[in-house]
Length: 118
Image 1 (cartoon, rainbow, N blue to C red):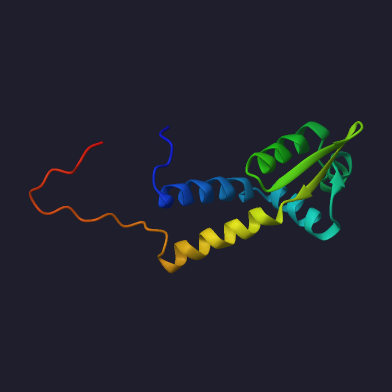
Image 2 (cartoon, rainbow, N blue to C red):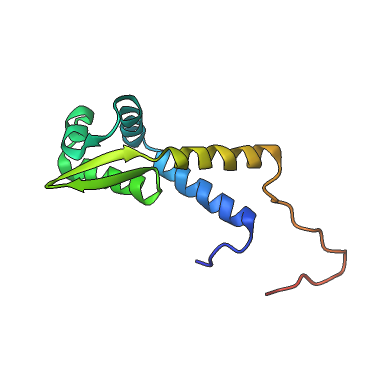
């Protein structure tokens, strides 16, 4: 996969990553718990969500890779917390997209010309 080259491509890929991470009911439940209660150990998240430790860890990995949560080791325990900056970023990118300021349009080539291939 080619790395994004324009700000619009960067924004679209970031949105896709965030939407994919948030596109699961279990992960949304985790986000809601962390927002409501604050940082929680993985074991408590597992209990509250009703999933096994390996399964909740899999969901947390997706959220962490998307930058939506942070995990911190405290002894043998991992503590999870929301990254509010990621949600601010999501809102900003969505706002640019909806406002039409992401820069999605390309300049239209003149009829009969061959587009520049790079």
